[in-house]
Image 1: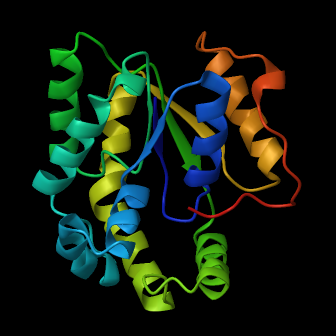
Image 2: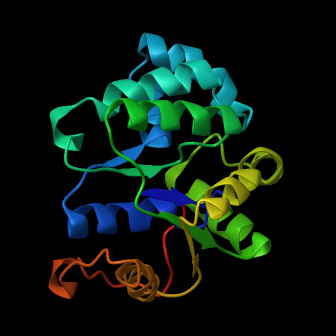
Length: 206
């Protein structure tokens, strides 16, 4: 499964819930990058300049990281990708990886959210978490890059009949419920009890 949506649409929050519900790992390139930056690893040093500027990490580096992660034992029975692929070249690389393993995506969940709401979410998160990559200018640049590079991927996956669209605004539980409903319509069902319930009146940004 793949989650697509602009920065701040709530992908990270929903990825965690869907990961638990379907019992598959949620693979977030953003989390992998931030962990390495925080710990000053060799990878972290390579990606820090791109993240601080609100730019995407080069495809070659991102592809290598995802390929390595999907070979881990916990991903053999399924996985949920959050933040990858983001470019057409990454789509082609993911196609190659899946074909080599004799598997394919079951669904692409497109989470949509109003642009101004997204900016407000990310500014709030920046204030709460002190994230240097979430200034107003960088946020709007990231959204522009998303529209230019990532949004066209929706057309690719739509042509394959894989895309399901979900409104990302509202309470966390409501958004999770919407996602599970559209996935169930595609034959991907889980017990409702398997979905964690949290309090709060809005989906967290990611």
